[in-house]
Image 1 (cartoon, rainbow, N blue to C red):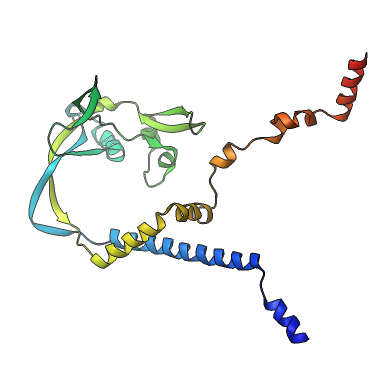
Image 2 (image 1 turned 90 degrees about the horizontal axis):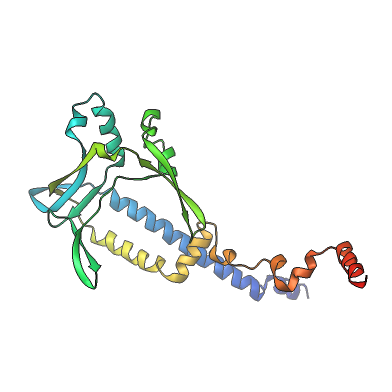
Length: 246
């Protein structure tokens, strides 16, 4: 009899078995997610090898300090700011054009290039190391996003005229050696982790939150038409009845 009772205690319910299976699947996904990060970091740290014969691959466009600003006493100061907000753009030709549809026809227009607009995280990041004087040349801008229903805050450089664009040939001097086994394993993990269901589990378990759009459109029961009369207290309801009978 005692052996039968012990056997019953060892048997798990259907709900418990499903929970164990779900936990095992989530554990495997975490392990593969961590493995994918480790492999990507390993591939990133592969050292570059110099080419025997460098070659040109298109052109690169970037900002430089204007000549008149270079001759001023603040040349080093603005050069330091430019190193933190500079951008690069690549093109197969010198013209840096893109296709655009106008009046039903496709035309080529020049690609616009701007300086980096710093986010709040970059603004406070100690790695960027913005000094107090450098911060005085940035303007805080808040733009309302109707989709996210919140303000996007960023910092914009207020004197972009101090920099001009310059185009140079894009010379390739180094290359990164390929590791077929490493790339194959990374591709397999990316294919698995990129599945719709797996991405939802990662978003919920690893990042610690579920899809927020469900909560955004959830109906408030107090504001529902079916529950509007519950907002009225008992005394207010009695007073309204008295007024109706008067």
